[in-house]
Amino acid sequence: MKKCVAIAFIAWALAMTALGQRTPFFSQYPARVEKARAKSINFKQPNNRTYKTRLSEALRGGVNFAGHYIIVGWGCGTGCTNAAVIDARTGNVAWPIQFYNVDASYGDGYSDEQIEFRKNSRLMIIHGRPGSANENDQNKPGDYYYEWRNNSFRRLKFVEKK
Image (cartoon, rainbow, N blue to C red):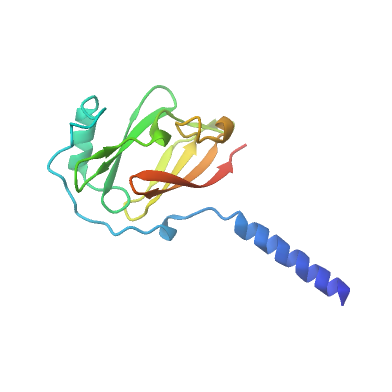
C-alpha cells in the first residue's frame, strides 16, 4: 500500500512539474480583430518623425496584432531588429523597451523569426534576446513570452535556449 501511495505521489509531482513548464500559446490570449484604421500616425509623439516612412507604410498595411494594433519592425544591423506598436484606432505609437535592438542570438545559432505574433492574440514571443538589459535574464538567449496589456508588454515566461 505504501508503495502505491509513493508511486501515485511521484506521478502527481511529475505531472505538476510538467504543467508548470507549459509555455503560453496564442489562443490563451484572444483579441477580437477590428478593421480599425487611423487616418495617420500621431507625429507629435517623440521618435515618430524619425520613422515616418516605416510607420506610415505599416498603418496602410492594417492590423496584424492584438485586434487593433500593428507591429512594425526594421533592421538595425546583423541579427538585430527594432520595432514599434501602432494603435490602428488612434495612430499613436508605443515604443516598448523589449523592441529596442532585439538580438537574434538563439543558442548556438540565430533565430529566423525574432518576433512572433498574431492579429487575433495579445501574446507576443521574442526568439533570441529582448532589447532591454533589464528584461533579458542576464542576456540569456531563449523564448520570451509577453502579453500586451495597457500599451505595454508584461512578461509571462522565459524558456532558456542552450
